[in-house]
Length: 262
Image (cartoon, rainbow, N blue to C red; front, side):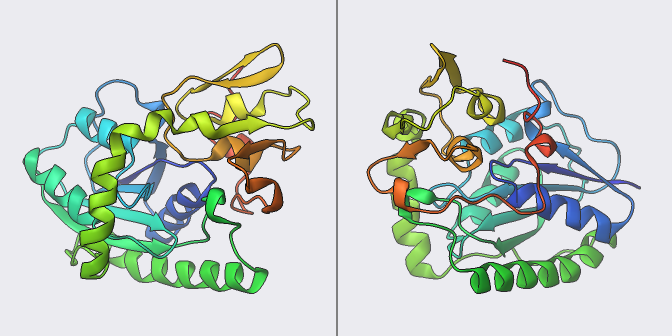
């Protein structure tokens, strides 16, 4: 039976991971979480959720998707949490959310990729990026047979100190995430192309007088700032000095919202 991989992405890491995993599994298809606004009923077969870690936990968009996902209790369900080295308690959180719906998370893996959280700096040096891509590819090769054979595996988690400290930060900040977009601004390089509005998976940006305006239901995926062709979008005071990043094998037209009209 076909494996369905549902992904959520801002700068392409999770989309790349989902695509690569689908290639390795064989009989698999890749679908964007944001393309399913209503109830989600996968075809028979394994289901894998692929998503980034936001503020050391599940993104709001993934929680929303889970609330609309309809699965039989017997379904094989796995997850891949893409992060920059601090998966913390994210997959444990997902496991508990699944149990609340009567499902069992059969396996959950952490996949370390280059960081896209530009307020804290760029993604790292070229050697670091290459190493992370290579290591991620090798891990996906080890994961694919487990999914293909519907085998269980431990739900991966970060060290105890991460699960205590970062989970506390996640819980304190989660409700504030939608309004963190108040720290975005545009500099003089902005030419009003509107790409930031089109790539936003939360439809959180509208163009007003040729400039982006954020609507305060942000997910902090940072697609807008990372995909801006002019590097005109900024966040806080430090981002003008930092290099931009999106996965080199993902184009803006590959994004589920990348071709959306204004």
